[in-house]
Amino acid sequence: MTRVSFKYCCKKLLLKSEYIRDNARLAVHRTILMHDVKEHDTETPHGVLHVTLRGTPKGNRPVILTYHDIGLNHKSCFNTLFNFEDMQEITQHFAVVHVDAPGQHESAPPFPTGNMNNCALINRINSMIGIGVGAGAYILTRLALNEPALVEGLVLINVDPCAKGWIDWAASKLSGWTSSLVDIVMAHHFSTDELTENQEIIQTYRLHIAQDINQDNLALFCHSYNSRRDLGIERPTFVFLLLLFRCPALLIVGDTSPAVEAVVECNSRLNPTKTTLLKMADCGGLPQVVQPGKLAEAFKYFVQGMGYMPTASMTRLARSRTHSASSMGSADGSRSRAHTSSQMEGATGGPVNDNQTRPQTMEVSC
Image (cartoon, rainbow, N blue to C red; front, side, top):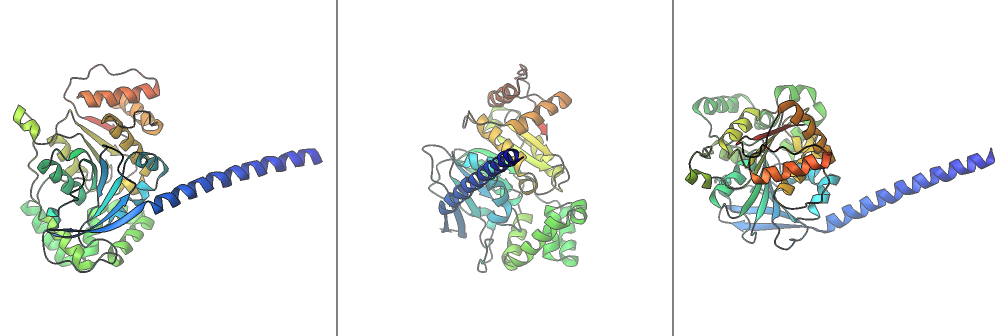
């Protein structure tokens, strides 16, 4: 009895020591990340940008540049994703630049009247992979159209490429008279079902939007975004139209997000040989917050398709991709998409799809 108890205690002690060791490693890793974070205020012709840098540039590799949605800043929009373990594996290979829209960072002073969609980015960036949400996705897409040599790839969450029509404009005016700014922003992020069902996250973001963001600055950002022009992207039919949008794009939307129709519309306009549409199940307006694991896995897959991180593991999305491929019969179009498809199928031991020339957008549900 004494021997059994002794062995049992040793086993428990060993497990506890491993638990402490693993948590100590994680704490040290997070401490290193925190020490590796630098914040800057960058002057631009359109105001001051608050920029947060994580890591150092890795040779000739592009940086990952993020841009948030209205009512948010880089912390509330991207911290959950970039603090996720799988995403930290990616950030070991890339420097990260978080851009806060003018006047949207915490404790920001009042911002003068102006158009926030035209703000310049960092001049020293030679190439980038953009991750944008909502208004940030629109801004990064316009950047890719204006500076195609700068943008290597885009991950666009809840992107809307269209200008507001007269009906939408009238509806927004009416809601502005009858609803508070916080309610309007919340309806932009969350569907009606989310607003009533997921009370914990709804209350968290409602308080953040109401208390942490300068309300005058937020009103300017919302007005600027609602006054946006149509991006003018059309699915290429002639050779010269291929120059409109060159980089590969990963479109992401939750299946209950208010932005589903807008993202599907954007997908219909982009080059199908360079575009992947990812619809996330059990997810609404903030997939980077609710499903950071799936999004990190999707981003790994996307980066591998661009030729980076060829040895990274991606078991979670690979299983989802195998299941969706059997149920949806989706195919890849371009050589780069075919390359990533072969890697993913190889990871799961399945066959590689030989039908690689059909111009069909790949759609993945997970």
